[in-house]
Picture 1 (tube, rainbow, N blue to C red):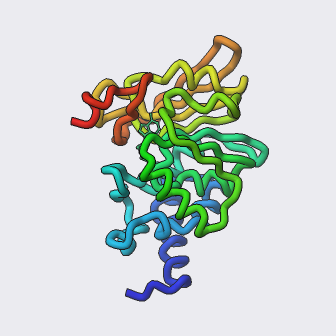
Picture 2 (cartoon, rainbow, N blue to C red):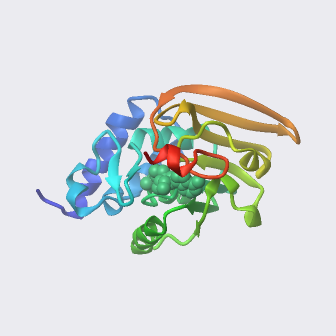
Length: 225
Ligand code: SAH
């Protein structure tokens, strides 16, 4: 296959049209970001030819890069503004962080696997994106130093919304996360922080994510069986 830059750009534009616009993604900032961030850079050599397929793909440490549509949907549901600071839990390949970084002021992203922190750093460095801060640790504890966040996106499924993450949301802030009692099946939930102790929640249907492992998520023994 021909791996020229033009060829990738055509595949990317086709993905945006067929997988995102056709399914109802409308936010022009999200569509633009998805149209300029090269997903092929975040995918291992063996899977590069599948970079614009309509599904998740394997990345190191037994994790996955999410389906393009899910990345776009979650980001759209956050109603982001260019001035926003966003916290992402689950850096993985760094792809979603890259998309977010084209929409908002700054992205803070936390990952529990050192191998993926390094992998994502390499990918993001290749692209020269410099408004993304990475951190190794348990993302269920957020990243208190830079809180509060205008938006929080959790890219792994947990049994509940971690109370610590609720506390790191700005007033008027939004959080999106897959929630489910089954460690491989969840529902996509969006939370709005309306006041100090006032939140509203909305359910956006069934999804399937890798488990969120941490002190306010699944325990490693349960989740990594
Ligand atoms: N956003 C990623 C998708 C990552 S998949 C991308 O675009 O490629 C979910 C990631 O969450 C995995 O890399 C997994 O290791 C990570 N993860 C799971 N539990 C975590 C936790 N408590 N803190 C930080 N990262 C976590």
